[in-house]
Image (cartoon, rainbow, N blue to C red; front, side, top):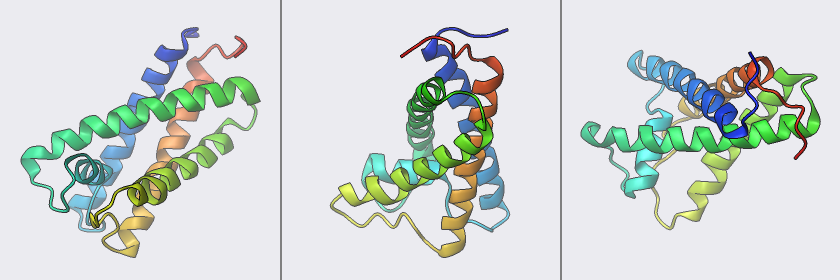
Length: 151
């Protein structure tokens, strides 16, 4: 079954890919490998404080899910324009771009130090989670999206 609506494609791919990203990142967090998750980072950015109380982490989940939907929409349009060939490579590339935007560009727009990068291993785990996001989103878009419509 192919989905023709662009927003529905983005919602499905973005939501499922973001959920996969969060599951992996929380697993790494609970195992002590990573010191923060994308939900922690989103909470820090949205509330503007370096400390993230667990009772406010839902704000980060919501923000991260919304970001996943927006990036999902961009990836649907990209794949519609560039085609489905090498879709996993496109997803990996887009995941790397999303990681750079979220961890290099957006934090530099804030005027305060929110401590978004606690250590090198956590930063690397975050990159891996964005690669997971890109792979999952590109597989879902390739499998369920009707990309024959022109932009």
